[in-house]
Image (cartoon, rainbow, N blue to C red; front, side):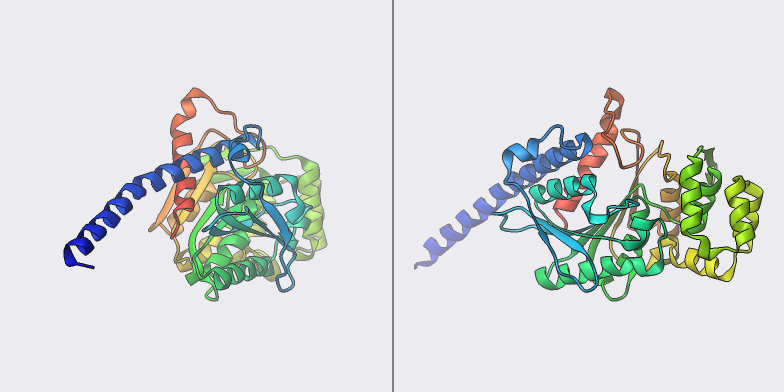
Length: 337
């Protein structure tokens, strides 16, 4: 082939590449919008479902972990993603989790969903990060690509601990939390008293006493019986403050080990913290606290379009900025390198 012909061919290929780039970007932006719509509406507006093949759900064998994998057939390239659930007795079988995983798979993600044992029983422990570590390791080794970690609510504990784990942290391309937390001690204070604070922000939420009692009994091994009974009898802020000021050694060790703010600086991936301003389950101040622990390469997205992560969003005209911010978050996941 003559040199002028080679030059013309290379010029044509370059033009095609340059023309394809805006088209690919537009497709990803549209996919991000459709994904966000389905997630916020809990599939009541099934835009992706009308345009893409149904996601396949398969049991995924991991060491000592019950996990599922969601993939949409026909995708030439997909982004590996580990989805970490919050408190639910059903683990990976939670209906809302399964729905979200299927939507993400249709959007172009290769989604792994492990069950976190402690989050099914209301007694989170440091070893609950192991299922996430195993899932990241398996996806990274299989796909030779960076893995996205998306952690929901209190699943931010095992999700971010895994993202900081030296065994897999170099394989994490981005870590995203939805209604997550920074300090296990502050989360415990909030759960037992309803009080929260960070900087100038503070507030109070009234929790269901039955839920609080169930939580205390599930973690009875961490405090002595008189303390248990005092906490069960009435949620006394002074008693809780005294307990957290000088906690029993077992409780102190668990709280320290479960606090993402402790390991935030060891996470090498970009960190995106999405939180509802009116979240009644985990206060938004926890995302502010976590951002303060690792300010570089960290973005906080505070929204009013939804409170915690369950239930459909309540979209109003004033939520345009929130929707735009969430749209760009989904787009960033889709374009993760």
